[in-house]
Image 1 (cartoon, helix red, strand yellow):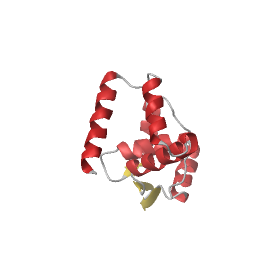
Image 2 (cartoon, one colour):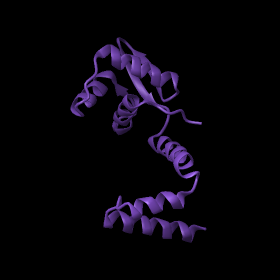
Image 3 (tube, one colour):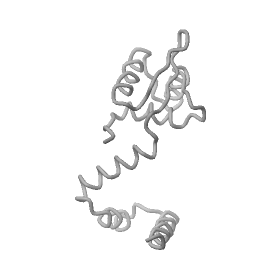
Image 4 (spheres, one colour):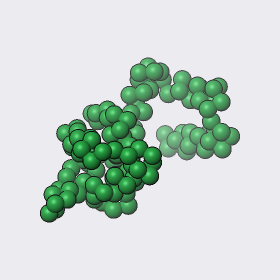
Length: 127
């Protein structure tokens, strides 16, 4: 089971996941956070990266004086695990309840509604 991570850790992982390179360097993460308006002190970022490694989200390889970070958990894996957790916690595992809330709460644009409808039809055809 994939652990939950804090919002700050998630921001870091989004930068790592969004990096087109397989490895991510510390300055890339610092710059990415600053660009999002969420700059961290160097020591704070080191602590957060260490936590992500302890939770099994990242691995680090020391190359000279720098660390190269590699994601061990895919973004889609984390999204799926968190969605299942949310669905179970809020809707007792009932996906229909979630979709109903999205529709009745006007939380979907017309385009999103059509895309969702198409996805549901494609899923139905696979069964």
